[in-house]
Amino acid sequence: MNRQQLIQQIREKQSFLCVGLDTDLNKIPQCIIDEAKAKDGEDYVFRALCEFNAFIIDATAPYCVAYKPNLAFYEAYGVDGIMAFEATIDYLKEEYPNHFIIADAKRGDIGNTSKMYAKTFFEQYDVDALTVAPYMGEDSVTPFLGYDDKWVILLALTSNKGSHDFQLLQVDSSQLTIDSSNPSQSSTVNCQLSTKERLFEKVLRQSQQWGTEENMMYVVGATQGQMFEDIRRVAPNHFLLVPGVGAQGGSLQEVCRYGMTKDCGLLVNSSRGIIYASQGEDFAEVAGLKAKELQQEMAAELAKL
Amino acid sequence: MNRQQLIQQIREKQSFLCVGLDTDLNKIPQCIIDEAKAKDGEDYVFRALCEFNAFIIDATAPYCVAYKPNLAFYEAYGVDGIMAFEATIDYLKEEYPNHFIIADAKRGDIGNTSKMYAKTFFEQYDVDALTVAPYMGEDSVTPFLGYDDKWVILLALTSNKGSHDFQLLQVDSSQLTIDSSNPSQSSTVNCQLSTKERLFEKVLRQSQQWGTEENMMYVVGATQGQMFEDIRRVAPNHFLLVPGVGAQGGSLQEVCRYGMTKDCGLLVNSSRGIIYASQGEDFAEVAGLKAKELQQEMAAELAKL
Picture 1: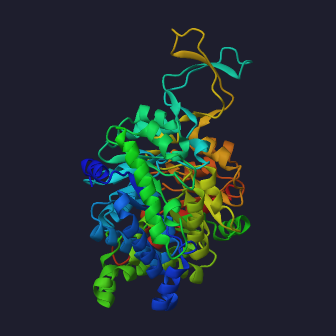
Picture 2: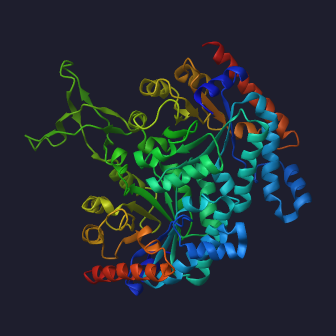
């Protein structure tokens, strides 16, 4: 799906909601497990994962524009999990071909290895987008950028506490010149600082030399509030994938106030807050209601544009 | 496998070689493909991957202490690939239980997702170690550290060209104080710099608050030569996993000169230089010879300790 088609979907549905499919057998309703066991006995895992996802997708599709299965949750069940991931993608492509599909896998490796990952996700699974980690730099990211209408979603400023460890560090892109004429004053130095920014800003700026607004988005956690202002200074038009609304505590209003662009420019993800909102037999209905609530808040935000 | 057992294996085998199992159907010998097709017809992928790996492992096991299957190459074949990855791990554990197994997957995500990846690799596949990307910080790494005799191998300074984009940036861990008393001299400022180091050094230093020499190693590319001196200043005793010897151009002698510790402290990986050294019917024999050559160079380096 290309940028114009995505913007069109957001306008039609009055929603920029992405539903995260973090499907965990320990959290899905017992009725799904029981039914899968009744049909497949001990080999119930594949069916349970697929059935849960199908119910959630059917209930939420009118209110969202994207789905984001998180690979960790599928890999945890080995071959059954991978088959369920594939079947979920197939289900989405068949039943809801206008929904944007993001594989949340946070891949990234040396060139020849990233090329293999790109083939896997963009040719074999044929998803629209893949989350990618930036630490290994340009040649770990560019192999994902050679596909028409496919997207890299690069980690910039994530929603977790650990984002403070490295992403917020001040980095100096220029050559540092230290004036050590008085070595006894070792803690105070004169230095030439032509570019001073934080690591996530450097990632945003540098990666714009590799991709464009048409094939690259960024992950920015909703928990980062006013930081969206800083993000928009460096990446004024790129779409941002925003996790962390709901279970992780981020505020939709704050994200929109500081992060929304004239084209919306946001895909706001909710996983646990929707898919595990109820663990009873009404789980799909409640998931649909939660998605609808978010969609209505989003419609109100879009109306301000 | 714990640290003492690994050091013991290195002493016994006089080798610190890790063989990378980047198994690619486009590069393995035609004879393996033909044989797999003769047995399984169009469903030949699983057999071809497993057979190739088994031949390579049997030929190289006397000369190496570790194997490193790269997940990208298995995921590329979907369910067949994941089954071949599992079967290769099972084969290693059964036939070569004293070899250290590294899943090269470069995972890392928010806490609850990293916990799922940890379960997958350390409980389900039961490998000894997993490569992990540091960008998301502490809570993305610590879920992998709660397992006895299992290891995180954290990316520090990688072997690829893109390592220069972010890993070598100067970062400032302290609060920056800018003296802007004369705003016209905006390019020269006085700043208080209590800690100044490059990002990979910050990753090395910070992560030592999360793990120990008993459960954490670092990836440092062989292509980085004298940088090993800098690495050893920050991480004097940790084991380093060193890719980039061979196809990527790194020098074993240089790595040893600057990176070796009294306990060896190195696992040097070669993938393409061993497993694709011949594409004829003699591929396993030639792989064994290439591994033996490296083992002998390594024995000479170990003799200097």
